[in-house]
Image (cartoon, rainbow, N blue to C red):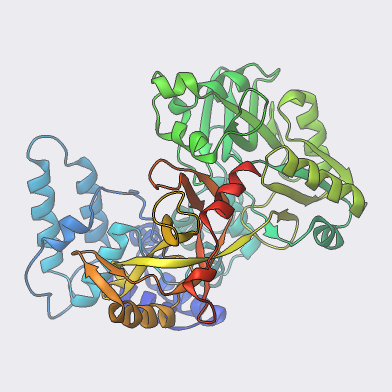
Length: 511
């Protein structure tokens, strides 16, 4: 199939807000794909090609010159083969070879294909065709039950491979996809609620568990072989020997565990989140690995010694987890009492954790965030900060000022001039096309200087930012950085001197 067909479909999907229209467009494309093109095309559409990241950045793409092709000739197979070559082209002189190969591919691409290929390479595909929409499209194109397809995707962790099975081998092949110890499973996710009481109103009797301030892990053990995967199913076994050792000590032969891992201080409280995450990029024999021990905590078990537990109610899975790993189970209680749920939430916050997750006690394990079987409750903080600068966007946002530099008011001059502003982070999350257009015009009106990438502005504009918390930072002079910052709205009703202070944000560290 021509790559242009995929690009045209992606454009149509981006242009509509209708889920049904998205599904129809994607299903029509899937029906026309050759068997060998199915998995690659699905990977392109969701921005996750089967090869993963192949080491091409904006610098490499920006160095390419020449006009785009007038007519589409590139195929899905050619782009897929090109990504394979990028992965295997290594060693002396490989950069020049990769650049030449990329330039050759782009010279055969139309303008629309060039933009699409760029976004695939940079992981910036934004079609709105998320996994759930494509799962529905696979069901529509193949005629097989969507529940069967969802289960195959969950157990294989491979949406493209599941699409190929559905379209070429049929329902029996999908049903044959089973849980395999050593092959990661797509994780079950949680909806959100404002309070434990509100969550319990939805769930009824539930397991109310601490939501740890750690990193999601899935651990598979087969005999003495232990493998550890992240939330995105990347393997990190060699980085987490302390997790491996803890699971090897359990009284089981085969097991699949779902949980989190985090670094604890001497009092048993969680260390800053970035210390936990730093271990995921650190070799096991490094000094940091020796200094920062990661403790695993588990809230679910999917398989034990030949017995699959996916289709058992949560109460059964919890009982099994208590049997095999009582000392590593995430704290929690089973209750239908709102006061009890609120008490557990208070205890979780007091222990330095993020909040609680409220889980229907008879719920089965299902990948993704469907329904309200699991509901997380954690505080979302909003603060009014001042825009100090803005970086030019890339990919789809090229030509717009996008990434905001955010500052908190330094009223007392603890970190500079009294009444000045201290940078505490950046974000481009939450910005609509309308806001991008507005801020691109506005910030150039109040520009004080610029570099090739950044426009620095007078500290006039106040923006309301939602964050999950803060963390210590040596990068910013105030010693604090925002966690998971996203734009809520611009506050044209507020003056810069009304912004929240650096002291307020630093106070979150103590809390």
